[in-house]
Amino acid sequence: MSGTAGLALATRGLRKNYGSRHALDGLNLSVPMGVVYGFLGPNGAGKTTTMRVLTGLVHSDGGTVEVLGKPFKRGDRHRLFDVGALVESPTFYPYLSARANLRELAASGAHVPSKRIEELLDLVGLCDRANDKVQGYSMGMKQRLGIAAALLSDPKLLLLDEPANGLDPAGIVAMRDTLRALASQGKTVFISSHLLAEVQVMADVVGIVAAGKLVREGPLKELLSMQGVVKVRVRPNLVDSAIKSLQPLAAADRLIESDREEGWLAVHVSADRAEDVNQQLAGAGIFASGLESGTDLEMLFLELTGGQAVGGEGTFVGLGAPANGSATTGKETAA
Image (cartoon, rainbow, N blue to C red; front, side):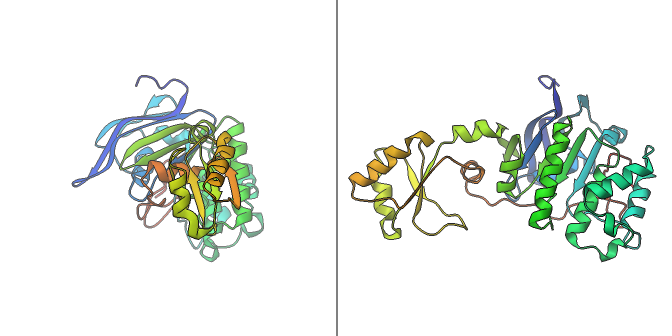
């Protein structure tokens, strides 16, 4: 595969069909070494299918995948020894403790020192509940245990699907700090998530997919700087007039965000032109009560995907040693 030097993960022309539906339609991803990569897309965009292909849970219908600089093909499950993965809702032996579950997973592949298990329990904040049966765990606790399981073999590449599922705000912050620390150590962290605000403060590089194709990829700071916008607030009854008055300057539209009151507009000009926006409105007798420069990942995402919502595509195969699924933890699948 050409042009993949220095990449921890690369796909070229990746295709997967389910009947007449093209889940992946020539997907090209380029994930650099040692970064947190945010993998984003609306419902049905192909994120779930991509994660399943990358972890060997399903086979693609065409295209190529490289993992840590080498081709990843059918039958290459041993290649995943250097990869840790959490595929959404993790499942474990419910009648065993967290510590016992990790020991069972550790026994399914290359040797893992017992101290590694204790280190990981501490890392994800489960030391105090390590001897409790997993059947009594909350969703957030299971998610943290899933991250610990994905890290068992100290992988070079970590694939995480919605790792913040079930976590409270403090848990999300702790997870963010942990993943950033892993990237600073040279590991590559690939995250599929619907939490755009969290991805914005955590990711170095993002890839946005829609309809099974990559629509934008690159360093997050560069993408945001290219997508200039000025947010301005006027009286709600003057929004239409404000949009019309701004037409000579730039396109503008209503800004609908769940945490904002009515009356906000998004004006598509570079952030350094906020003063021009204000003057244009004032010239039309419309006075702004709020003005913000800059852009955010949510606005970029909505523009590139046609305003579709972020989310998953259905039921995922869980992590762990399950009775109803399979998992990749940097080792062979536990039965």
